[in-house]
Each structure stands twice: as structure tokens, then as C-alpha cells.
Image (cartoon, rainbow, N blue to C red; front, side):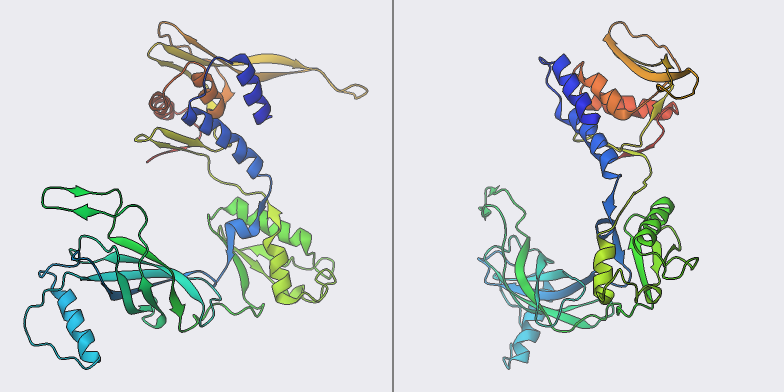
Length: 394
């Protein structure tokens, strides 16, 4: 229905051009409504105890073209002296001039089940007063986890996107931030992290966005796909809180539905089950860029808007609803939301109604209203208590 409305509006206003931001709010609202019909569990939830682990380390980047740390960066010099001592080179106690070296921090993310010897990307960022890391290479750097243990080591040439930045005494040219680079597959796992063991005794799913309704819906989807072996037994999936759904795998391990797939096969099937995701109605606006994003559950009720020379009225017209043929029933009268927009002298009329943000955006778009004006209108509607959603301003 949403896309049919877009096509109808397009036919009625062939000479008008949709503003990108106003079209985006309407399109995302339609997509949100359809997306909530069924979402895969693996897209919105993770198995508890199998989260990513963030690693970090301190190291040196060498081979720079006179763009490294200045003499004032004492810890860079001290690190170089200590490194040379480890390889049997003694440096006299004097100030070193090393503009081809820079002290850096190295960060990376260790994904679950990354085995010893596998590789992953790392990001390298300058710590001192270096002007560029272009052309440099990271010296072997150990990476530690939150517990202080070393889980990986990183080394290799840096990759900086964009054009090179060149500096002179008069000016600085370039179009990128050259103090942060990436080393693709630059880290090697040296020690495997102790993730949650899949023994089935403590198996649970954790929602990325906690919500009680979503947790209950996910548990119902799992129980529907894997009913208990004994009639009347406790369902295998239970929502413990807004984020956690506990699964009793031993109670279903011998189910014919699994056909000997085991724990891994069971998790693979659970991950691909779909359920209805419920979320809080929000309208997110960015005043700097004019971006407006609204979910499908957002509603506006009982309000009339007058902004400059633009008036928007939300009305509720009664409509007679006839009963279906050959079915006993009575004629009923319902209210159908309707919206009228026009350019005229500002007036303010308040009539009872219910509509959506997409309808408001579509009506304002027909008059060529700028995104900043739409943001101002939404803020005023929120202050009036007619926007039934949380307004988030970035």
C-alpha cells in the first residue's frame, strides 16, 4: 500500500520533484512497516557469551618521510631506545632526532571462534605530534584484551585512503586524515579467546536492542518451530528479560525435527527463524544535514499546523462501512484520516484526527517545503503533545 501511494502521488504531481530528505522519510517509513513482519533472529540477536573482543596495543610506525614525531615526544624516543636494547644495540643518553618514526596505538576486534593463526584487520592511529603516517610500516606490536592477556600480534605496511598530503612552510594541501591507517589482515591470532562453550546447558540469545515485546515474540517463534517432545511440557524457549531468551537444548536434543543435526545444526536453524520485532516509535532528525528518519509506528494526532504561508490540516472524515455480502452485520461509521495542505494566509484550525509522519512529509513535499522547515514543524508538534513518538535530535 505504501508504494502504491507513492505511485499515485507521482501521477498527481508529475511536474513536482521530490525533495530527497522528504522522500527518504516516506520511503523508510514504508520499509519499516514491511520489515517488522519478519526479521531473522541472527540479524538482531547474538548467542550470549560469543561477543566480539576488542584488542589494543602500543607500537611504532617507521619509514616515514620526515613526518614522524618531533623531539618533544619523549615516549617515542624512549620506546625506540628500549627496542634497540632488546636487539643488542646500546644508544648513548642523548636526544635523538628521528622524524621517520611515530608512536601509535593499534586497535582491532577479535571475532568469536577466530582460531590461532587466522588473521584480521587492525587500525593504527598516531599518539604523538606526527604530521602523517603515509608510507610507514608498523613494527611487531602485541595486542592485549580487556583481561591484559596477549591474544594477537600486528605488523605490516599501513594503507591510507585518498591522496597524499604534502606540507610546505606556507600551506598544507590534501583531502584526507593521514594520521590514521589500516592494515588489512595485519594481525595474527596468537592465543584463542575463551568464548562460551556450546554444551547446551547454558544456551541463550541476547537481543541487540532490548525490548520485552521482541523477546516474547522471539521465544514464541522458537517454541513454534521446536515444540516440546512431551505434550504439556515447559516450552524450550523462555524470555527471561527484555534482552535474554533462554533455550533448553537438552529437552529438544532427541527431537526428530533435528534429525541428528546436533547443537550446531540446531543453532543454525534457530538463527534463521523469523519473528516480529517491536520497537519504540522514534523520529530522528539531523538539523545540520536536514535528514529526517521516522519509523512506521509513529503517529500524529489531533493537530493543525501553520508554518509561515503554509497551512496543514489533519481531519477525520466519517465514512460508512457496509457489512460483507451474505454476512449478518450492521452498518458502521468510522473516521478516515485526511490531510489538506494549501498556501494561504496562516490560519490555525484544530480538528480531531490521526495520521502518520509519512503522510505529513508527503503533503509538505507537494508544496516544496525545505527539510529544515519540516524539522521545525515536527518539533512544534512534539511540544504540542501531538507527536506520539520520541523525537531524537542529532
